[in-house]
Amino acid sequence: MKLENQVCNLELSKKLKELGVKQNFNCGDLCYETIGGRLMLITYERLDIVFILYFPLQMNLTEDLKMKKNILKVFTVAELGEMLPNTIRKNDVDYFLCCYFTPMRDGRIEFEVSYESCNGKTLAFIIELTEANARAKCLIYLIENKLFKL
Image (cartoon, rainbow, N blue to C red):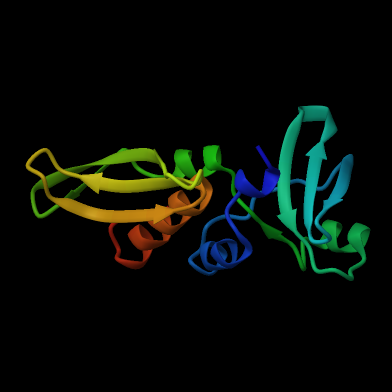
């Protein structure tokens, strides 16, 4: 699977940052590589941790990393999955996190992330072509509608 499909896109990453989602990453003993000119894969060697960040095309990588400026963390499917709550209670109804994927006839896969109750009510329903984008959009929806705080 391509790295670009394992992380949410730049637009959603910016929105998550605006909404206050923490941009946690460390800047010691780093190795990095450019992917597609802008997406950087950062690994913190000593702890075997991987950070995936977007960088502007022209920047002073060493200085910007030290100062943590001009850097935007993008989140993986796993990170977004850990942030999304398993259940949300609204108006005395429990809604449960549901994640599905549907293979399409043209070979694409659609990913669905939703919150559904046992009585058939739906609180959120997001469909995207990558699982990371579907999870990111769902998290944005929950935060913007004050259904969840990080």
